[in-house]
Amino acid sequence: MRLLDLIFPPRCGGCGRHGQDFCDSCATALQPVPVTSLHGIPLVAARRLTGPLQAAIHTYKYRPRPQLAGSLTQPLRRAAIAAGLTLPALTFVPLHPRRQRERGFNQAERLAGQLAASLQVPVVGGLSRLRPTPAQVGLGQAERQINVAGAFRWTAPEPPPQGLGLVDDVCTTGATLAAVARVVAEAGGSIGAFLVLAVAQTLPGPLVTSPGTGRLSANSCLGDCE
Ligand SMILES: [Zn+2]
Image 1 (cartoon, protein in one colour):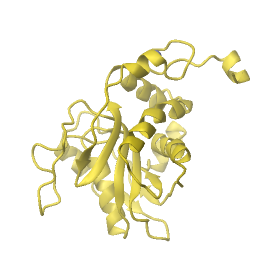
Image 2 (tube, helix red, strand yellow; image 1 turned 120 degrees about the vertical axis):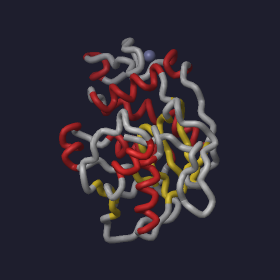
Image 3 (spheres, protein in one colour; image 1 turned 90 degrees about the vertical axis):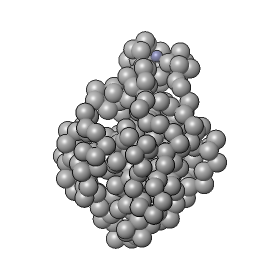
């Protein structure tokens, strides 16, 4: 046990009990999610966004408790391995610099770092958020797509690699993931999989992309990730 843990015993981000960052009882309450796809790209989520996981992600981002990233990433690592994904590197959904200064860290970047270390692949930066999109909470799918349109750009001098894993914390309608995947493709790379801690309860599966349009069909992803 670390000295710091003796002085400040960790509390579960899900239920608040002392002892672990995410306790066994909260971990066993999580509902597994089958691999789905979004715009033809596999969407791997550790769990549904409910109960203790929702509480833990909220604590992680807004309290904030960046150290929860290690525990929260574990079920996602297992889901990525179970999905048989071969990803050469990971990248992450960027925050606007102002939002990142306010929060003190980028929750997606931290998750990507933990996940990449356990999968033994590098993290590739290069995405930038050009404007601080308003909070997505309470917006519908169409509003979210407008909200994130033109919000991202690949700004690294080298083009992005092929088959990158794109990490974010939550997928609610898929608008953010889809917008970032488009930007990566326009810069000459590609996303091999979306990797998120949790998908919203309303996100049905499997998700469907309308042939030829590249747009989501009416019964597909309702989600986005903010
Ligand atoms: Zn707990």
